[in-house]
Structure formats: C-alpha cells, structure tokens
Image 1 (cartoon, rainbow over the protein chains, first blue to last red):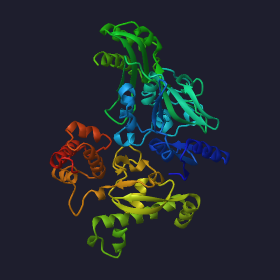
Image 2: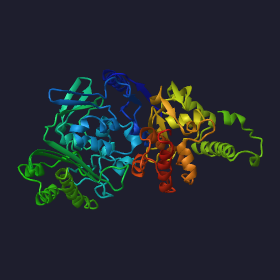
Image 3: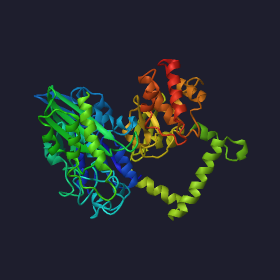
Image 4: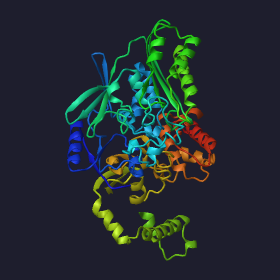
Length: 327
Length: 211
C-alpha cells in the first residue's frame, strides 16, 4: 500500500481542523469510519489520500438521541449496532437495510456515514479507468459492460448509488448532518445526493474537508409500517441489483401516505413520487400492487445490457408492498 | 519470533519442517527476483521505505499477551500479526474484505484483519487462531472441525474457526441456518461448506456455550 499518515482525533472539530491543516499543506485527506472500503481503494490506487483521519475514537459520534419528534443517529454507529438498535423497532426498514450490507465482519466495523458516502462500485471506476468519477471526462459504461448500471438518473455518468442504508434513510424522510470548517448544517436528501447531471464526479454535496456526522429522522407515526427488500445476484456480500425501501402510514387498510425509494438502479437513491401518489387512498390489493410495479418502471431508461433490471425492479416494488400487506 | 530463531539454514531441507523450508525458500526467491525487476538495490529499496513513512508505537493484546509494536501507519493488522508477531496462522487471501481468511476476533467481534490498519487497533484485544487451543487441548470448534473434515486445503480454516468461535460465544447452540448466516463472510474455495456447518453445529451441541 502507498505511504500515508494516520491521524487519530477525539472530536469532530479536531477532525475538521486536522483536515484543514493537511489540505493547507497540499495534502489530500480521507476520513475513516470503519475503513474497510477506504483501505481497498488505497491499495488499488483509486484513492490517493496522503492523510487518513481516524474517527473511531470520536466521543459521542455513534449515539442515538431523540427530542422534539426527531431522532438523531451519530454517523459513526456501526451497521451491526444500527441493525440491533431501538431505532429498528420503529424504523424497521433502516435496521433491515443495515443488516443487508456485506458480511458480519464488514458490518462490525462499517459505519452509517461510510455506507452512505462510499464511492460507486462501478467496475470501470474501481479498476482505475479515468472516468468521470476519477476526475476524467468519460463514462466507459455507456458503450461498454453496463449490466450493473443505472436505469434512472443516468448521464453523463451511469453509476448506481451503492448504499443500502441511503434509500431507507430517504424513505424515512431523513436529513443529513454535515460538519465542516463553518460548523454543522442540516442538509435535505434532495440537496445531499447529487445527480451526475449536476456534477458527474460526485455522489453527494460534501465539499473536501466536510464529512457526514449523522442523520436526523422525524419520529415515524404509530400507524407507519416499513420494509426493505434487496435483490442480489448471490445471497451475500454484494450490492443490490435492485432494492426497495418503503414506508407507509396506514389508516386501517387504506394507505394514508407512502414513501418508496429505490437503490441499486439509479445514480442517487431514487424516489418513486408517481407511485407514492398513486398508492395514497388505496387498499393494497393484488391489482394495485401490480400497477405500482408497472408504474415504477415507466420512466426507466435501460442501457444495452441492463434491461433485466426493469422487470426486476417492477417485481421488487410489488414484493415490497406485498410484504407490508402480509405483515 | 521463537520459530524463526530456531531455524538453522545449514540443515538439509529434508531434515527441516515443511513450514520452515517453505518460509525460507519463499523469502529468498522473492528478494532475488523482485528487486532486479524494480531496478534498484535491496539496500536502496529499504532506505526509501524507511525515510518516507510515519511510524507509530501501538499496544496490542494478542491471545492474552501484551505487545508494544512500532508500526508503519499503512500496515494492516494482519501484516503486523504475521510479519511482526510471527502469528502466521491468520491468512491473507484476497486482502480486500471478500474472502474471510484473515478473520480475527477484535474486542469480541469477528473482523477482517486485512482491512483494518494496525494503528486503528491500538489498545485492542485480539484473538487469532493460535489463541484457541489451550494447554494442548483443541477448542470444541477446532475438535469438531477435525472430526467433520472441516478443512480440505485448510487455507480458509483459521478464518472459519474465528468466525465460528465468535458465533458460539453469542449463540451457544446455533442451528445450521444460523451458522450459515454467521459464516457468509468466510469463503471456502474447496466448497466444503456442509462439513464446516456441521462442525460448528456439533461444537455448539457438545459444549453448550463453553466454546
């Protein structure tokens, strides 16, 4: 592995100033939560950071606290801790999404913030192609091997957003707490996730020197139900071919409000607004669920080799809703 | 450390253990071939490495023994276990969090030691496969691996044993499905999964939590 320096910090302020100091010395910086993915990128040379800022020992950075109808989750919570936390009792979709990532060994160290902000797993980017994500000006998937690429929100880059936790957070109405030289700010999901048409080099709005320190969730209504459904090309250790995070509030058998977000098929967590509107006021009958699946893919635009994702996405939406009907 | 200092390189390879022979033969071959390819002398390569990297002293408790080790910031935990502490039971397979051969138990939980920097493990309690047997007695999960032919080529076995040991300390008598779920992060290229799962179930049934 290339040489770099590790800096241990005990607070977010210290992390931000250590990053600013390193950058003013002309060094590139990476923040490390669990570090699993960062280390692969450093070994492969797709990340060339000179300084790693280790956040493991930051006080209070993994705490969950609730006040005034809002739950704040510290970004350094591990996926294993998140999947077993009380948050999962009321926001089941988030616990399921966290539990679906990687393997137990990965979830024991990987963090909420790291999962949301991990770089894409496009095989061109990960194999050192000088694509948009690496600072170049081409997306090699367009005319290349694009089996795993985006059917929504693509252009000029066609990566899929790799996070499982992010679609669940967006479905729950989360906002994203960003720390940087100017202090802390709350960023809505719409602003946080960045489409390639806005900036093809990035997946989120974090500027260099900024980091995601947590998320803020509105407390779900008592009548809300939620579910995460992930389809993979093998049973473990991989990203979603497609995933669906759904949060519904019910009035008896009638849907009062719906929030449905896709993972694994779009350049950002992909909110199905049309489907959400369709479901409101309806009972989840077999016909309604089938219609929701069809509606979900009406705006999908496949590349040459990823057409399989369309029926897969329709089926995943149907199955997610059926899981909620069947409890 | 102990093993290497006992090695007498003047011995005929036939009189030495297979492990000792392979360790030394491998080192010699790597130095002889790699350095000329790079076009620099071994001494130069070493001094470049030493001059450009930061080192930190960390404390590790491994299998109950405390160690103070000077590590380069870029060294992974498995590199320190194998190369500095001579605990070569832990294997490096993929070196990228995919295969599980490097699994160790860190602060009670199985982790991939290839994907943790040693400096991040400062102060940690680590258990490796060398820490499972005690007083010459295999641990229940090791014994069950022997009886069920858990190892085929054996390369994944140390990692499988560590994940299984961590599972049994949380769930004393797991069923086959629970074992499969816990072991998804440990690949066996010989595909000996059935025997491995049976071994872990047996270890749980026998010891009822004393693994």
